[in-house]
Amino acid sequence: MAGRLRCGMPTEKENTLLEYHRKSLRDGTFRTNEDGSVTTVRVIGVPAGGKIYNVPGFDPETGKDLDEMQALEKFGSVLESFPSYQEAFDGPIEEHPSNVAARKLHKVIDLDRIPTQ
View 1 (cartoon, rainbow, N blue to C red):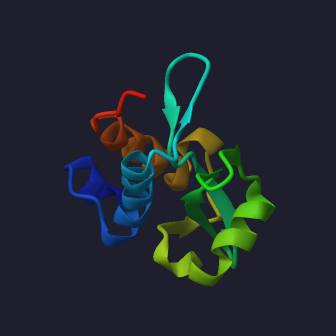
View 2 (cartoon, rainbow, N blue to C red):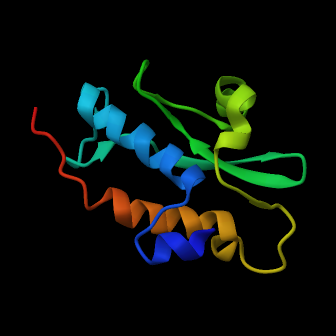
C-alpha cells in the first residue's frame, strides 16, 4: 500500500485521507496554528480488529483534535474506507507501517498550496 504513495500515487484508501485534507482546504475549515502551519487532517492510528487504521484526527467541523476513541466514534461506520495495517509489529513504533505511511502522506499534503486567510 505505502509503496504506491512512495512513487507519488496514493492508493484509493490513502486518497480518502488526501481528499479529507483537500476538502478542508477548499472549505476553509482548517486550523491555523500558532507557528503559522495549518491542520487539515492530522492522521492518527486507531486500533480495531487486529489492525491499525489511519484516520483523520482533526475535526474540521469543531476545529478540535480527536483522540482515538472520538475518531473511532466519528469514523467507525466507514473505517474500512481508510488505510489499515496489521497491528502486530516487531520493531520501534515509529517504524510501524501505519506511522511510515502517515509520514509519506504528510509529504504529499505538504505539496498542496495553503490558502491565505
